[in-house]
Length: 446
Image (cartoon, rainbow, N blue to C red; front, side, top):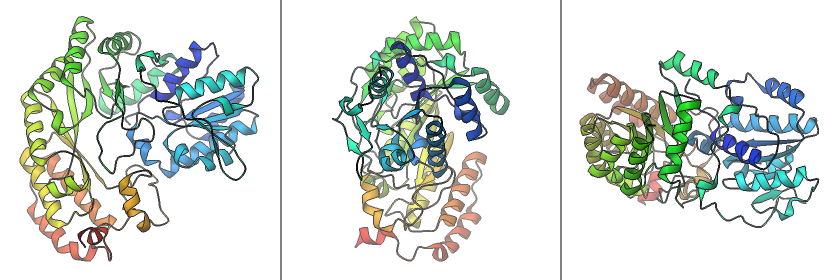
């Protein structure tokens, strides 16, 4: 029960309105099933349906099976009513043939807004030939046909604020306050990430980094306070505030605009300097999530993370000293992780005591160097059905069941502050029986 608004969709809706189009929104967040979408189709009778993944929600990168099935059902329902359908999102970019075969007339690649706005204008003007619109995949004989590549959007201040008025904001408020006692909302200040972690997929924004001006973001926060009035904000950026100068300017604009809202964000351990954290705290940072990943430096190096375990310790201490919650993402099972590496992760968590941890297992996302390395080991299951499945999709050192036990024990110790050495000894005794017959790490070590 932590629903966030479909940010990419709302930005496109606002852009289409600027282009003079009449726009209605179907928000699937609280829908019971495809029947709700069909009712919306019958109510609004649209000529064009655009389906967008939320490109600012990292969970959608996992392209879970349930999400794909829902998307294909939505396309089918729209086509059955004679609608033209365009799609944008990481999974559609990975598997365009499946979406086009389901009835979509176009798949927009990358960030998608500008291509889709141009395409909708073309279709509404009666032109059915989309080959002139850059950045699309179209149906072809045997395989999708690409239109010319569209350059990335560099000046993202050009984009309008999200069309929040199309949402049932009270439904989000009720869900949040009922489950957590506070109301959280999402925003984004930037697009992309320049770092080269070899397991991280960047199908939408790539490795560039484009950031809105501090003034532009603060102005949106002023509007957010007036129209939505959340208790806190989740900045959905891959990296919020890449440099200290931007963050300092943002803190100044927030103060001048009287629009300070406590916020949560994601960043990297190497960026959490004294001056950066001081600016973040002044801007309203309540919680920072860091991709610590592992307590073993050799595992971090294998990820091409460009960070260190020592930096993770320093960043956590600096954040805590400024009254900001330090939270960690931990990733189990990344080759060549073995039992001593798992213990190093456990010990790092025990010693630095992050305020919260999120534990997952290594997930080979299409288009990444990591995926290319383990692709030969991928079985029939290529995606998780739910984001909490925590299933090993390749031959890691240990079984899925074993990693789930490690996750649960790490969470229990971090939440209670009670170290359970007896349970760890039991896991070590189990480790041999859960070892994969041909773990990928052996190939690396050989």
